[in-house]
Image 1 (spheres, rainbow, N blue to C red):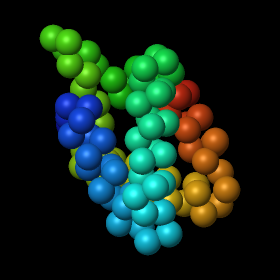
Image 2 (cartoon, rainbow, N blue to C red):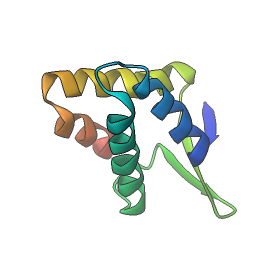
Image 3 (cartoon, rainbow, N blue to C red):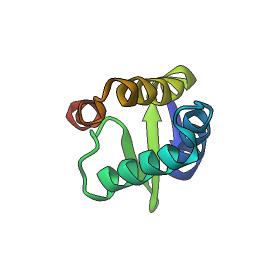
Image 4 (cartoon, rainbow, N blue to C red):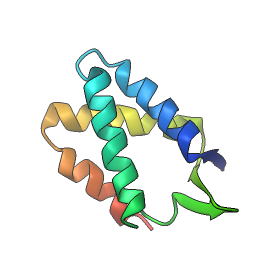
Length: 93
């Protein structure tokens, strides 16, 4: 298990998304806004979120899962399936 501070997680995934020429910084910022909204609204699956001493942490299996979030986002955008992408992270407990 890998536990990252929320801000570090956002920086890493945003950088990966920006690496896709088709997505760029604009889509990376959209992803970040949607992700943080899910956390703020309490909709992100509990298995990903931990609060400890007032800080939000994101818990994932390993670094490969971090890259997978960006890769799957790219695939979802390309396929026009962004809503399905986000529902997947909301429904996993």
